[in-house]
Amino acid sequence: MSESQDTIGYGCTFAIGNGANPEVFTVLAELADVTPMEPTCDDEEVTHHTSPDAYTEWVPGLLTAGEIQTTLNYKKSDVATILALFRVKRNYQITLPDGSTWVARCYLKKFGQKIPLKTKMLHDITWKVCSGKPLWSPAA
Image (cartoon, rainbow, N blue to C red):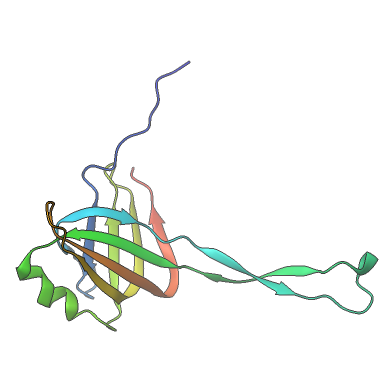
């Protein structure tokens, strides 16, 4: 059996695009964790009075890209920058340690903070993918 080719997530980044052409992405903050979007397909019921054997019938509907969840280390200098992104549509890029990327158009949907007694403070942030299909680019 060969060795695993798996790797850990160390080195992953989350960056915001500047909207230029070509677009330049700048790392947003200290990333502790990221959960990329989980696309889903809607189910559309198409049952009718003569559906075979009286079973419900379904067809695939529209796709929904979902949301990106990030956990960022607290830095007071980042708070105002992040809060200014509420309801602003921008391109965001997740870069994996091997150089592969996800790019998605998102807006800031939810901003939360964790302020524990004995450990580091964090921001829990939800980014809504709002337009189009997320773009996957595997590393060369």
